Length: 264
Image 1 (cartoon, one colour):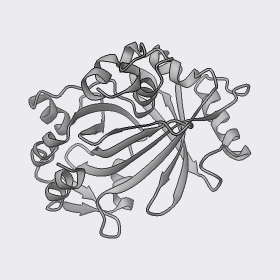
Image 2 (cartoon, rainbow, N blue to C red):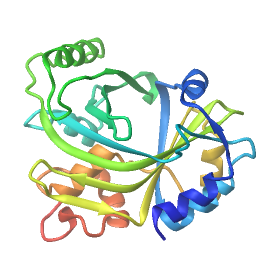
Image 3 (cartoon, rainbow, N blue to C red):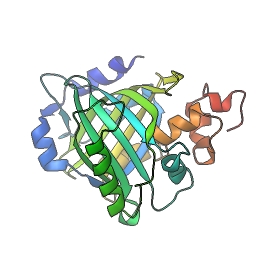
Image 4 (cartoon, helix red, strand yellow):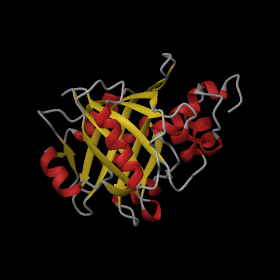
């Protein structure tokens, strides 16, 4: 089954919601994220089981959108290690590109109270492969406000991700669900890893969860510590500590370099 075969039939019958309305009703820049990695063949059962009033993001007649994210970290992987070692003050920094429109955004993620994720972002007009001076100043300000002094950090590209995303809106709870398929991870040296038979489903809601979470739990899927950045680097770089992600790697990334020939 291809990603198109899994997603298109089940979202094709849903009522659309425009981007402006979705942002107004469910921007959720401060939220609790729960991520699930599951076989692509299970996806139709998940989408079909959601509330009847579920809506799908539609822009210019399209319901799946290609994304590219370039992540930046220090040469000694301060951001990665913060996640791997579950530090309270940790961050992710990326330039996300919406490939259909060519729009770029600089996004900075930090940890908020009680395990929430706080994402702040601004449009970015520069080269998505590097941080310009204004972008760097913005990142330093956001990180500084979160208690992370990054002024002496040298930030370099460390990972690129590519995928296709479908976004669902659950009006009853005001929550969102994203479905990512055709997942690809690439290091700066060109080393790639693909997981065409897997999908990452992410719910973005309050602490109590949403109807989508309860549905996934009923289908025997549990949240797992899968992070496109952390898990992707752990899979591709055997030199990095990966204990936090080893169960996910063993189950969903059997061809990962970290599990084949080199210790994780």
